[in-house]
Image (cartoon, rainbow, N blue to C red; front, side):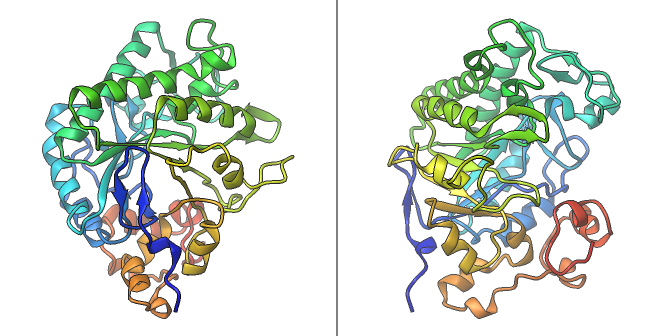
Length: 379
């Protein structure tokens, strides 16, 4: 029996080698305290999945108090957060995986901070039909503070023992909002032309490198997660060609892996953008330096899916399958592919160490059960 390519080692952009090509990608685990502290539920969740991939990525951690997008997120906005994050990192690294802290600012989508009376910010002050709370346009000082706070969050990740960070430049978060021509109508250095709309993600990346260099941590991993397009019917924030251009600038500035976020039920790992003969994975893989791997995912649930995804990428990320069967990779290594479980059940929800709030979200019709469905659980 031929061993899956997924189990072969992979070298990242900074020369760090990881044991296999599988990644457990970031998921909303909903398990943190209201003030963003790590709970034992979250530690148990990660401990149970410590062998799932060579790279394990946390749920999004917010770098500023007004950046929280969902209940139960971690905070990395304060030095006091480091102690809990250290326990989380230790659990993730307990079987040799590299622990990656994802950092994300939700920008205009910060409904929870809005309820708390915090100032919710966006690149431009405009009306978003689905948002019912006030949004402030970021000042130049706000942008400078944001860049600095990404750097501080990275230092806290280092202090907590993480092996790297992943910057969330996707799924309509603040960095994507700045790149989007739909949501960024600024006329200063942070908006207008393509180059100015791309400036904030690049400034954040530059600050990360400054912090990592100052900490003398050349082995610290910088991951980068993107949405390859922002197209919603007639509303176009940017096209895949725009993001390919931005990604070339990011690659020149230096990242250690690229994670192509294809979220939503309309996408698969082999989806093609409109008007293109090649898949998203093929288009981005074509611009990658030989030493910087591309991770692809979405609708990857079985070993066959993994092998198919690796035809056009260097690594594969999985999220929902990590919920269903935390032992996926152990079984793959042992040649026990017939034992891999790809279907969730009501009973199994209670057996796989999910934080209580996440289990309840999937146990109840609607919510995640409908938006991010698990095979086996009817909507």
